[in-house]
Amino acid sequence: MKDRIRELRKLLGLNQTEFGRKIGLSQKPISEMEQGGNITERNFEAICREFSVNPKWLRDGVGEIFLEQKEAILKMLVHEFDLTPDEKSLVAAFLELPREYRAGVIEYVKKTAAVFEAQEAETKKAARKPDSDLTRDEMHAILDVELDAAEKRKMFSASTGSSGSSSKKLNGSS
Image 1 (tube, rainbow, N blue to C red):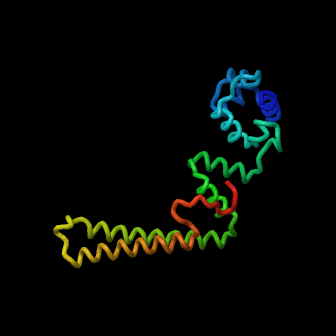
Image 2: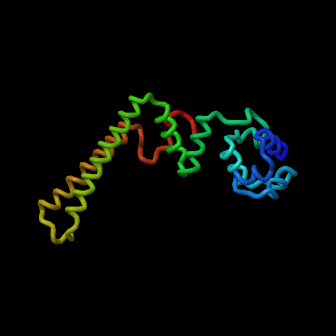
Image 3: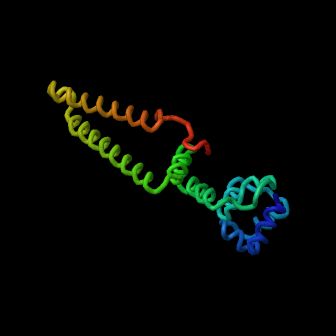
């Protein structure tokens, strides 16, 4: 890997100090890496992220040096927002949709969120009283709101193909 780090740095036209600065290191650790010193996972990931380097190439010399731009952007989002594999798949699938379909997805999510927010507000409003102070009608109203919310969540999960904690991938990639 030491030779590939040196090759990458030279390909980018950077000296060790400039290369290190871009990944938050001084010149000395870069020199040590290029001489075969230990490369931490954090530094490995920083090199890949900062320079859009293919991790397989950096680690094993396999494949192209640089990632495709789309893949590099997705990796940056995963890192920046600490996305789970399911969240990464969702973002990737969303970005692959045509613009008009993305607008439809956004509208659907907004409407669904509004329904959940209204139900939550109604539940909180009714639940402000201790149970012992609630009338029979208020108790029924709270239960109706909670049952409606559960039913809508179930319908939402079914319509999105999600089971809440599903690890199913939207586009088959992670």
